[in-house]
Image (cartoon, rainbow, N blue to C red; front, side, top):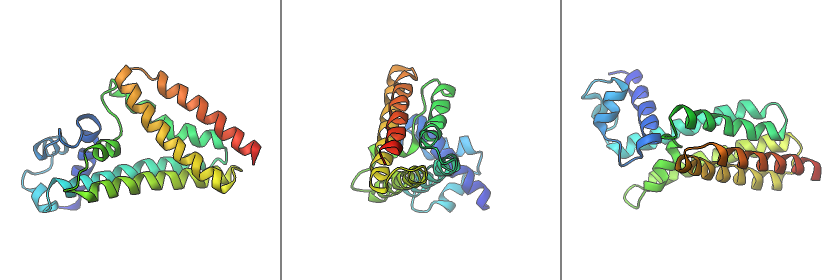
Length: 191
């Protein structure tokens, strides 16, 4: 029972959380989706579903952060916004508006019994904000403004994703992106 099946289970959990949420995803679903051997889930995740969810949130956070990092290398503030949003747009459309953010899915279901889930989500959101802020600073946005703008971008895009799922339309995301890009460009000009 190697790390390959462990990684597949973590990726599968993140994928399933996007559509079904934390509570709506059972171990049997993760096994079926990942193709991992039945007994391997308890071998790799002896602390149960919470441990799997924590690792899935970390995986999803790192996956998206890598995309943000690559996109912010251009040095253009508006491109940084596009990069963060482009992936969400694709996910929404390809899933027929059934999939959202696995980090958000786990966050809204995190409770006092598993504070590590909220902590993992906060770390993922924080990392995205830090990466965006650095990209915005490199594009010419002053440091304090870059940090606030990065937080706004993450919050607005996550909220727009929820609206898109509710309306089954990408218009809310497109509207938010247009405004965020204008803000990012203005922040460079104002700086």
